[in-house]
Image (tube, rainbow over the protein chains, first blue to last red):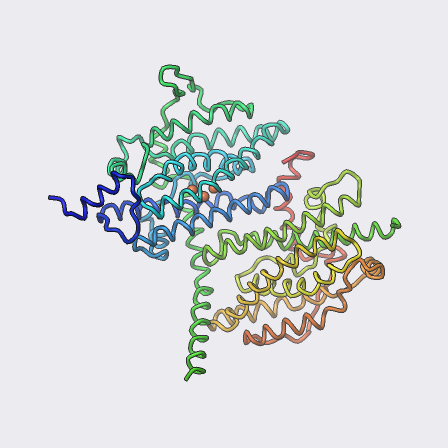
Length: 314
Length: 254
Ligand SMILES: [Fe+2]
Ligand SMILES: [Fe+2]
Ligand SMILES: [Fe+2]
């Protein structure tokens, strides 16, 4: 037996109408969305760290400006997504607590360390690049605020992707030392970038229901294939070696065939064994705790002002 | 233009570039360490303004030098003994109160300096000032609001703010020092006579601090040296970090 509300909800989904915050929605839909949007928001915020790691060492003033703006954009994406998620009835502070206690996840890519300047370029190019493939698809997601958020965010992510690629290109055309740095960054970030699309759909706990509700619009494997395909040409233009020795055009499929990923590594990093899992959370917790007296000061100040105002009015 | 004047302007632009890059760098150290996300964004904004300003000043210095150097050579290929920034701006970021108090001191300073620079007979310098004035309006609104809230917030925030003021006060005196180079340019209507700005600065800062329930310190100590390259120990570490990648790959483009 389906309640009329649920029927109406499914009718909207099937008609490609957006679900809005005030609309009725199944509890599981709401939960699923909170999980996905908050995870996305946390990824934007935690993602500030590996790139922020290079702000003070950026090798030219122009690159420093570009990197600062990018990291700032990511903070903005985080804010925007936190707000979108709040429309589902959870507060930002609750989400932050879930992040810090490990209940909520963030993209595993940010548990990889940024070891050289080239990593900043590789992240813009590959990590933002992979995020875009995913997010372009999410522009058609069924939840209105999330869909609109993706449309807005994608524009900036495309900009990041181009700037990252341009930074890597400069290195790839540069001195032998710079070129080596670029190749090394590509070798380290290529595979984790592919893993950003998540496990094979057959092993993804949330995939099926998310597709049904049109929260997700394309499968993990299809999105990954798009990214693999678009990256081949980009690596060629750079004149770098493709990290996947098995990459090969498949005329019949109209796609590139590639090696299977190291899924042991994927699960291992998700389960806490990446270089930076602890560091990222500790950094976030430390900044948050150090900021507590500041947040308290604002509250106290505002209370005093309010009391004074009330007194004057009396 | 005589060579003497030209060299003096180059030196002046370099000093202003050094001030901007050093403060911009210090502010950028806050990104991802702020008390909440909105502050990370705001710090990013202010830092971007300063680094942007540094690029304009350095490009101009490079143009006058006309010896093949560019803005990055000025930022990345000079040692701490060659840097000419004010000491106040190179102090480590400290806690949130320390950074905001430093910012307030700097913002009030630029609120007074920039309108004067706008009057400069040197069009390039006046042009940078025109752009920077708008930025500084926003900066000052922000640092002023923060100092008010922190000073008159909780006991702890008050204590931290008072401590920051006391620790930084002695570095503000040299903001108003003149030397031969700058005097020469003042006579030419090119540089700002900062010695005339101290009273106005003191008045503005004192008003804000008093409103924030913070005690304005006595002038008990004053450290000087930024404009002669006699720096604190902190600048060397800052530049080591800032310049490491650039210098590890000599002559490379980025
Ligand atoms: Fe983003
Ligand atoms: Fe994103
Ligand atoms: Fe991005």
